[in-house]
Image 1 (cartoon, one colour):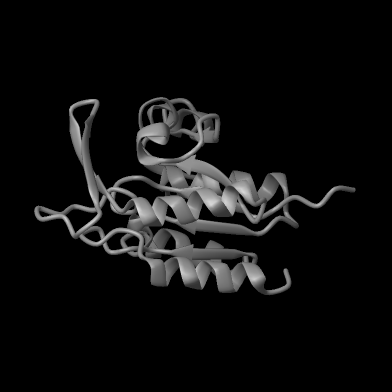
Image 2 (image 1 turned 135 degrees about the vertical axis):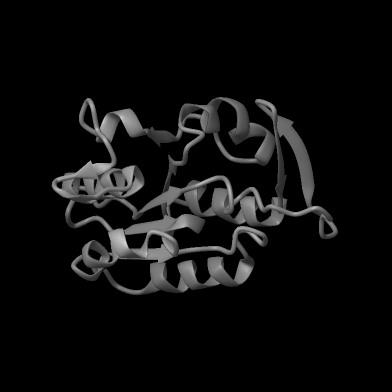
Length: 174
């Protein structure tokens, strides 16, 4: 049975796209689908390296859904063709904000689906909204020690220190 690398579920806004007026040296800015994004290409390069080296399998888990792959991947420096999770695929028809009788966040439903599909596979979930969604996610995360969550500050985005933490976790035995 082949061993697959951990999945890295990646958000865009607040993670790759930091909400900044003034860009630090070396950062880039671009307009996509009417939105201005600001990103650190050195952080994106590290993510790409993790994916291309086979240490993780990058997957999009963002409100940009398929637009992340189509519009953002190449300009930001990520490969095209990454798996994309979207709201419609994980929420039942007529979903009204509750899933299974409890408050629901569509990204949690997507992360659960990834974990349920391959229960032995480790997951890194990077999303700035994880801190705000702690009430919805805490019980599931406590029961799923194979999931590492990273919640970057929206105004700063994903940092090298946070990627160091991810890499240290990846180096641990599953």
